Length: 184
Image 1: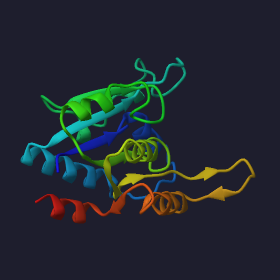
Image 2 (image 1 turned 90 degrees about the vertical axis):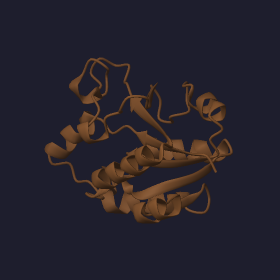
Image 3 (image 1 turned 180 degrees about the horizontal axis):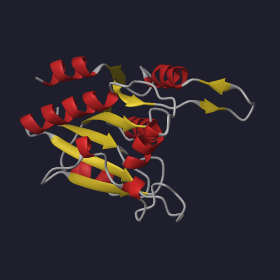
């Protein structure tokens, strides 16, 4: 099955949040994204980097802001496609669907940020569009959040619920080691 790795929003705005002390789940996510990238590069499989660019000048992901830059460990290499999005899902308003179809991609492996925002949006969209979707559970991360009801949720809780929502309903949720073993 033709497979593509989608690396979602691994950008400096999130590294800046981390450096400022934001409570985050899955500290091993960066290493696991690096491992996925290395395997896909070694096998010659398709890698697509998706970067968010905010349209508001005050958005830390605005293309002129330092936060829009990609984190160095996940920087695209020569020949790797970069998709720029302005919405949550990598498929919204981009060429991603057409690009995957033209490359005869049937399965996508999703990693990146954040587990409950853009990575999850891409996973749900990929599944709804007919792709076999694999969500790398330890190659995504979430941050603490407080709901509109005032209830605080830890990053670990949000991460866990995201995985529970996706697994079996929208595709498979697997550890990086499981994904790498299956791809060999």
